Image (tube, rainbow, N blue to C red; front, side):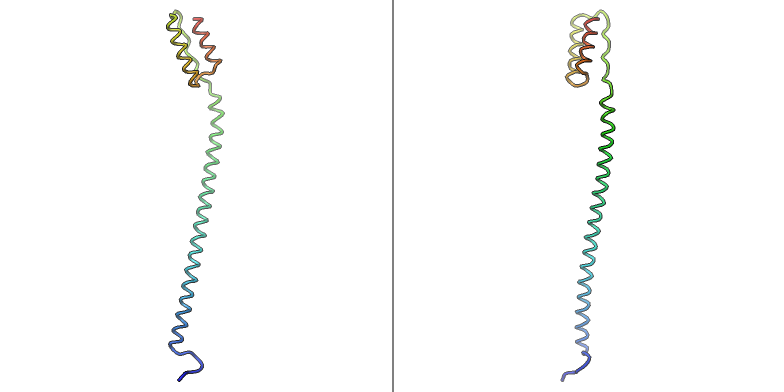
Length: 119
């Protein structure tokens, strides 16, 4: 015999189980979406911070570059009077190595060489 009207105990339990299962699934999806959005926000914030750090480093490098270029090269020590030709040649070779290494410009090398040969 079947009752008409309200569902019986088994029907109520089944309906409750379906509603609870649906609510759990929806809740899980919402939590997963929120976690994904939070992760994306964290990645965006990290990328923004990295861009700020990169920009600051580039500005610092740009400020240091002219200062490094404007720094005068060390002046060669004046040649003491009375050097032998072998000593003068040794000093000129050392100046040549400094020029090759980028420590002296051609003009500085020529000036120091003339000073050594004049002394």
